[in-house]
Image (tube, rainbow over all chains, first blue to last red; front, side, top):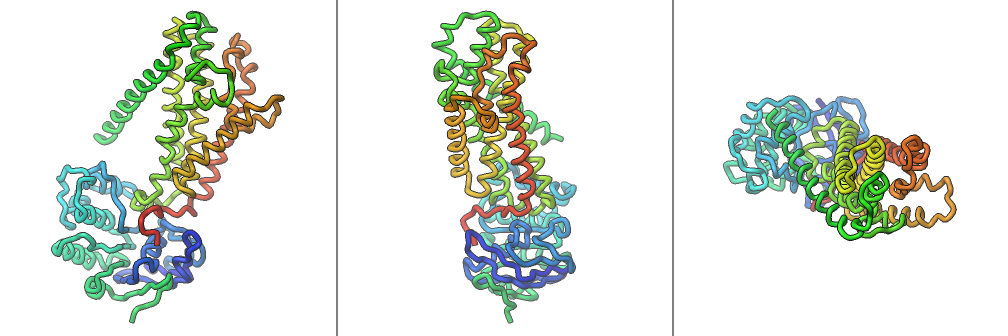
Length: 210
Length: 268
């Protein structure tokens, strides 16, 4: 699979956040996205996740053009900063609910992914009582759950301890060949260890980092 | 399966709780003036029922203040469910929407769901006064009273859906607080215009609040004339239904262009 952004442009409240962005990604590679706060990293992830409509430009999926990410063509796994899952449900219930939206998800799939991020599937606590690190692990688990073709991870190691970080990095590398992974992180070590290619974003413009 | 049963029980529990709240709310305003009405017979029933549904605080003529008091439960409904769609599409919905290949399907289902909830609320809003009026006036259920109940129930349910759906859609653009204020300012203007028309014009049918300004008692003298005498109400109801369908159609056309999950701390 190949996903290409061609002159992608997006404004929010009359502020240009993506300015003629061009980038190309293909299956089997991990891409990094770096940039200062407010440079447009999260917006780019949201565009690729199909949450935002482009004001201009195209998204090509296997050489077919679309006005926005077509979620019928690509399955997307996403982790965004400052997002929460359903606080009134347990971690297991959250994943079962989300996993069954796109396709049937078996209990053992949820068990496996929860264990691999370091969560206990039998934990009966509601997500609202989870610590920040546990919430982050759960967000990562939902992103990995259905083996998505496009994995978009915004600061995936936020709030995780050293062991947790290692687990997530291993998981990213294990899943590398299943699809495209785009990683946003301020941690230069994580980016340089995991990524095959690094994009840099500044004032909404994207370029390949040499 | 377990989860569905759990949800069903939760729904029944909520309906039970709201039923009690509605009974208490209605009984609170039943005291006082109600004792001046002769009990027994159709006319008393219609009078008590109408006052319970449309004019709670005092025995008032049909005017915009009475209508605003009368729709107090509709206001509560739009506060409780004015963010029903909006909540799903704000930052809490990002993980839901990345798994939603058809936003139109989501919107259609959610709109139907909201309409269903409006009907449940309408059932309580109109059903409780109907039961209380029947008990108070010792009036057994009759075809006439049930026909009246049904017409008021449909009108109120559609009206509740109309305002609440409007708040939801506008919230996507301007946020929930401003959309609530905007919708209620428009409703208030509509009430004022409706009640200040001295000579009735056909254009009044197009005011969405017209449906709440109905003098049912005078119009329900005999079942044979029910539909003829309620022609205005039925036309207003049809117009309101068309408004609702137009809103749903407009939202379905635009839903693919909505930006999801922007209401968080980091906008860029």
